[in-house]
Length: 407
Image (cartoon, rainbow, N blue to C red; front, side, top):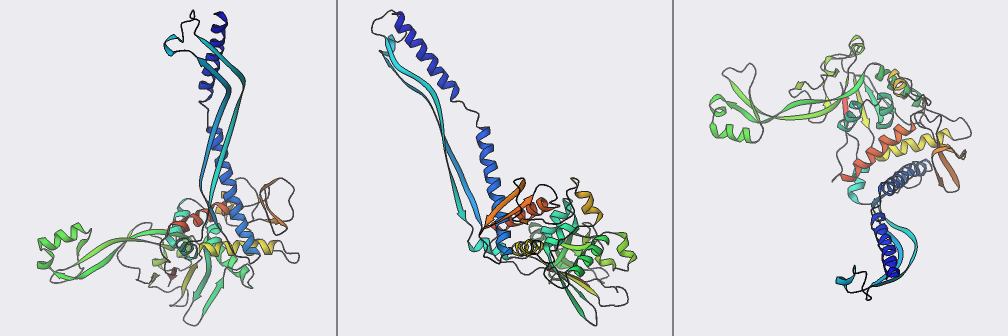
């Protein structure tokens, strides 16, 4: 009898141990999955920049899901007894047998990887960035010099006599000129803002037409505003639809001192009743310097264009003869780099791995790595590039080209 009690007691402890141990804290496992996905995403990002540096096709993938299962095993154990007699220790029918092995814990996991090759993704990848997207990053305190190096493809400066196009191309002959121009624009306070505006809807109305209750109800239900046309005698009315747009503008008082027109100065969200044309060109209405027709046009990149730009930098900074680097010099950028990790925009070393890198990938026999020290703004560049790439995954059609002209 006592032997049976002892066997059942040991079995009970084992089963209780199994029950308690099955309540496993999965935080370590989920954290491990998260780190693995992070590392995979970062390597895929760097790998495509390296592909671009060698003029190879880009290829993007996405981890669609991670699943796992766990199993806790304490060995085998058998209980033989009618249930209503299980705890009747004095009965001869009660018994237990089994082998209590060392508990074992196993885990299996699976990962789903999907290629990003749909037309929807490619439409987003090839679509030019809008000032709205750029405005989001400037509002987060990202240095303008860093951001505009990534997103601006070229700047056109036009006068009544000529037009000069300066490309943001590290391999181009005018790249130094572009860097100087960009730094000058940053010093003048170039930034972006979102402006609330009103768009005209429908014809001009008489006072009687504007006071029609049915028309007023339709206007209110559609979110339209009925405003009197300034200076109209007798009074005339126009319906407007509230809208918003983002634009490049200058926020510094130094810009006024340089003679920039009032209309290119930032209004910081003020109501702008139709000063922007349907094409997206911002009319300044005032002379700049000695020429009344001067204008500046910014052409933005696509997400793919950012990979091509960074790929060129990787190639040029690792060539044996005349390597180049891009250093950020604006006070805003210097203050942003609180870790004092160097002033270079983007740093990727070829075949210089020492085992202490932030990130590295192998491609066609060569190793490309981002150093932990002296990487400058590289991690910030990767973070912005990843954000813009993710925005490419949820668009439905190729947007029209985006340009912003300051006349």
